[in-house]
Image 1: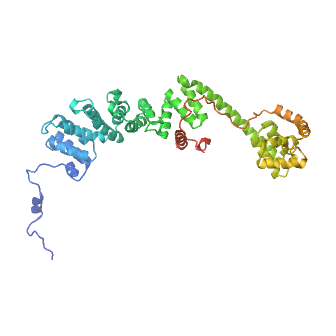
Image 2: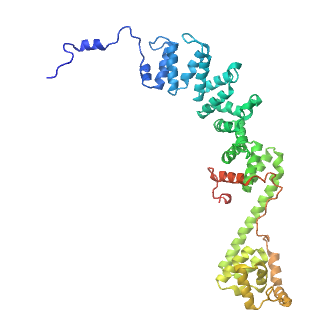
Image 3: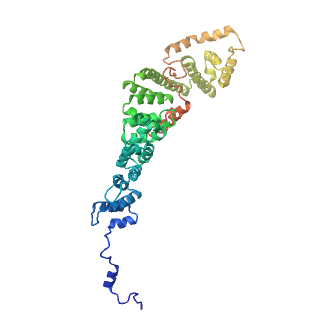
Length: 437
C-alpha cells in the first residue's frame, strides 16, 4: 500500500505551503509571459509599470527594462518609448543622451518611422557634438529595408546630392539607388522616381541596371515627365524597337520637350515607310505563293525579275521551277537577266544550264551581240508592260533609319543588349516580337 511522503498533512496544509507571502510584490501575467520570451507580453508589462496600471506600482526603470527587452525581441516601440527617458532623464533614470540616441537608432533600423525622424533630428540637425550623418545613413539603409518611408526618403536625398549640397561627402549613387527605387515604388513620389531613373538609367553609372531603368522611365513617362518619355524613346530606338520608340518620342514632344520633336517626325516617317513596305512585302509573298502553287513558274520568275526586281523572289521561283522540272517554261529574257544576277551558286548553274540547252548567249562564253539583242527585243514589250503596271516598290530591303535621327545612336552595343533583354523579359512584354528573337 502506497504511503504519502508528507504524513499528517491535509489539503489545507498543502495550500498554505504553496501560497505566496503577504509581502511579495505582485507580478502580472504579462511579465510572466515576458520571462518566457513573449515580445508583446514584455511590451504590455512595461506599459503597466510605466502607468502603474493593473495593480502594479509605477516604475519607469522597471518599465524601461521591459520595453527594451520587447525591442530586443522585435518590437521597435520598445526602444522608442524609453529613448526619450534616457535622452533627458526622468524619475529613476539618469540622463544618458548617448543611450537615448542608440535606442532611437535601433528602432529606426527596425523601420520605426518616429524613431527615424528622431534620429534625423539629433544626428543631422541637433547639437554639433552629436551630429553624425554617416551613422544616420547606415540606420536609414536598414530602416528603409524594413519599410520606413522616412528612411527611404531622407536617405535617398542625402545619397543623391548631399541634401542639396549641405553634405557633399555622403553622395553615393550605389548606396542611394536602392533607397530611391523603394521610395519611388512605395510612394509614387515624382522626385524619387526621377532620382531613381537618374541613378539606374545612366549607362556610365556604377548603378546602371537596364531592367530598372526601363521600369522607371516607363513609370515617369506615364506620369507625363517629358524627359522620361524622351529617354524611353531613346532606349527603344537603341534596341531597334522603332515602332515603340516613335510613340514615346511623340509623347515627349507633345509634353513640351522640343529637343525630340524633329526626331519624332523623322522616325514617324521612317516607321510609316517600313509599315508600307511590309504591307507590300506581304502582298508580294502572297502573290508569289499563289503563282507557284498554281504551277505558273514563268509568271513567278517574270514577276520577280520585271516587277519586284528581287533576287530573293527570283531565287525562290527558279528553285521551285527546277524542282518541278519546269525550267523550260521560263522566258528567254528572264534567263538572260538571271544570268547576270547570279554569277555563281545553284541558281546561276541552273540558269546557265537551261540557256545552253536553248542555245542562248552566255556572257563570257558567247559574245554574240546580235543574239543578245534578239533575246532582249523579244521580251521588251512584256517587260515594259509588267513594269508599268506594277504597284510594288523595286527594293529588297526595308528602309533604313536616317543617321541623323538620333544623336545618341552610338550607344554601346552592350547597353543596347541589356535594354533589349530587359524589354523582352519584363512582365507583359511581347516576347514573340522580332527584337526578342
